[in-house]
Length: 401
Image (cartoon, rainbow, N blue to C red; front, side, top):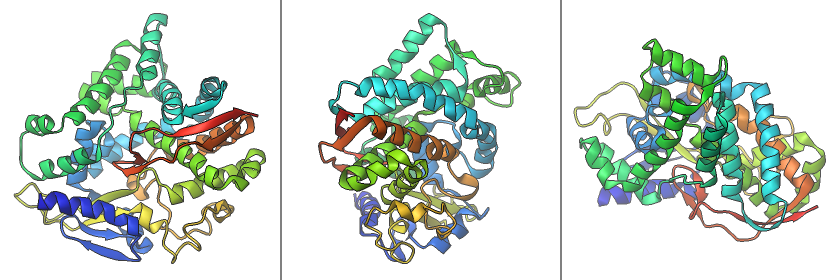
C-alpha cells in the first residue's frame, strides 16, 4: 500500500503548483519548467512512458496510437491526422451539432450539460471524422448508443490500481479481473467501434475506408483498425473544455458580452480556460534506453509533466489565478514555448487540437448568443485521466435570450 500512497501523493502534489521541480520517489521527476518541457517533448530520446501506455491500453484505447510506442504511434498519427485537421470536416461538425445542442437547451431550466453536449458531439464526430453513413435501421441503433450515454469512465482508485498492477508482471486477464470498471470502459467502447466497423457504409476516401483497406491488405489487423476508431476520448476532452469555459464565465460574467460579438475574443477566452483548467492535467515521458528485466519500468529516467503547474507559474504568467483572455489576444506569439501545453507539444501532440481550437470557441460563442448559461451547482473537481467532476456531471441554469 506504500506504493499506492506514493502514487496518490504524486498526483495530488500538482495542486500546489511547484515553482520548478519536485522529486517523486516512484515516477521520477514532476516538472513545471517550460524549458525542460520543451526539451523533453521535442526530443526523439523520450517516448510516452511504458507504464502510461499500459494504463491507457486498459483504459479503453486498445491498440490506438496513444497506447503505442513512438515509432508506431507516429505512423498511426500520420494516418488519422488529416481527418482531425480538415477545415471542411470541422465546419460540417459544427453545422450539424449546433441544432442538436440547441434543441436540448431550448426549454431552459437547470440542465446537466456534460451528457447534453457529449451525446451530440460524440454522435456527430464519430460520423464525420470516420466518414460513415448508415442504413435507416442501423442509424436508429447508432443514435441510441449515444443517447443512452453509457460512457464507462474510470474512477480515481482504478487508475491508481492500474498503475500498481502494470508495474507487476501479471497476466492481462488477472489485471482486468482486479479492475472491473476498466472492463466496462472497454466493453462500451468496443461495442460502438465494432458496430461502426461492421454496419457503417464508409464514404469514399474516408478514415474508415482507409482503415478497412489497410486490414484487407494486411498492413493493419482489425484490432488495430478498431483502435484508431476510438473517437470517445477526444470527445470527452472537447466536451470538458467547453464546459470548463462556461464554468469560468460563470465566475467572470463580464467577459460574456465581448465573446458574443468577437470571435477572436471567444477563442482567447477558450485558450485562457485551457490554461487554467486543462482537461488533461498531467502526462509522462521516459527515455527509450536503459531497459530492466523487471517490467522495464522502474530504472528509466522518467519525467512526469504537470500541465496544471506550468500553466500557473508566475515566472511565465502574471496573476496566474485570474481569468484574463487578453493574454492570448496576439495568439501564441507572446507566450513562452513550453509554458502553454494543453495539447502537448512536438511529435506526440494531440491530433485533435485543431478541432478543439476551431470548433469549441464557435460553440461557446453561438450558445452565448442564444442562451444565458450560468453555473447552478459547484462541481467537485476530480483528477482522473482527465480533469473532470466527481460524478461526471456539470449543472447549469439555462435561459433563452
